[in-house]
Amino acid sequence: MASKDIYHKMKDKVKDAFSSSGAETGKGKTKLSGKCVKHGYHLVKGKSNHPMEDYLAAEYRQVGEHDLGLFAIFDGHLGHTVADFLHSNLFNNILKEPEFLTDTKAAIQKAYQLTDKNILERASELGRGGSTAVTAILISNEKSMKLVVANVGDSRAVISKNGVAKQLSVDHEPNKERDSIEGKGGFVSNIPGDVPRVDGQLAVARAFGDRSLKMHLSSEPDVEEEHIDENTEFLILASDGLWKVMSNQEAVDEIKDFKDPQSAAKHLTEQAVNKKSKDDISCIVVKFFC
Image (tube, rainbow, N blue to C red; front, side, top):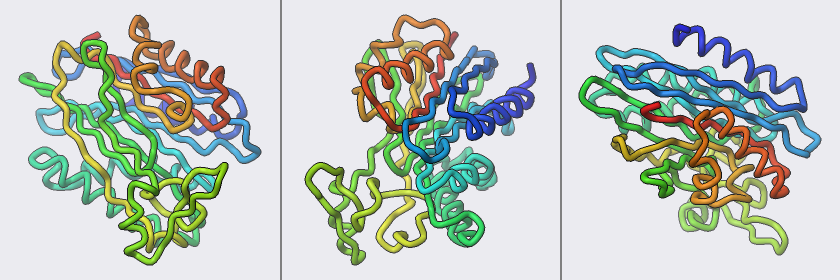
C-alpha cells in the first residue's frame, strides 16, 4: 500500500473516532530507505461527558533523498477543534520550513510558533480551547536513521533502548514553570485535591491556542534528537490519559514482547483503563527494524 493511501485511510479512521464512544484502531507498515518500520495505534474515549478530544496522525513521506515517518498525538481541551487544526496543519508547516533537513530543531520550533499564531488568528472560528501536542519525525536515509521529538504540554514520547525506557519529551507542568508564568502576570493554583493549574484553569504550562490564557502560556516546544540504531526497539507516543496511571518503564515492560504494534498500542490503552484512567487515551507504537 502506498504511503499516501495509508495516511488517508488512517485520517478517516481518526475522524470517525469523534462520532463514536468506542475505540478506534489501525496500523501501517513501510520501508524507510530500505529499513522496515511499522506502527499501530489505538484510541479510547474517556468517561467524561464531552466528545472525544484526542487526535493522532501517522503517515510516511519523502523529502529529497530522505524518507520520513511522521507521528503525533494531539490532546485537545475545551473541545477538539484546535487538535483537529493541528492534525491538518502542523506537519505541513514543519516541512515547509527551508531548513527542515539542515536544522530540523530550528524548523520545528519555528513551525510550532507559526501554527500557534495561526490558531490564535482564527480563534473566532476555532473557539477558545487549545491542545497539547507531541510529534515524532523519523528521518531516514541510506546511512542513518534519527528521531526528532518535540512537544508542548503533557503528551509524552518514550523509546525502548535495550529494554530500558527513555523519555524524549518534557512534561510541561505548571509548578515547574511557575517563575515564567508569574513573570508574565499569571499564577499557579495548588488547590487540595486538584492538580496545579495556570490561572486556576489549565493543567499544563504550554499549549497551542487557549487565547484567554496565552499571555501566561508558552507554545515553545522542547525538541530532542535521538539516533536510532539496532538497540532501539520501539517508540511509544501517548496522551496523558496513559501516563497518569503508568510509568515509562511500566509501559515499555508491558509491550516488550509484542510483535504487532497495533496489538501493543491496544494493550497499553486497555491497561490504562484497567488502572482506572478516566481520560481520553490515544496511543501510537512504532516498531523499528521490523
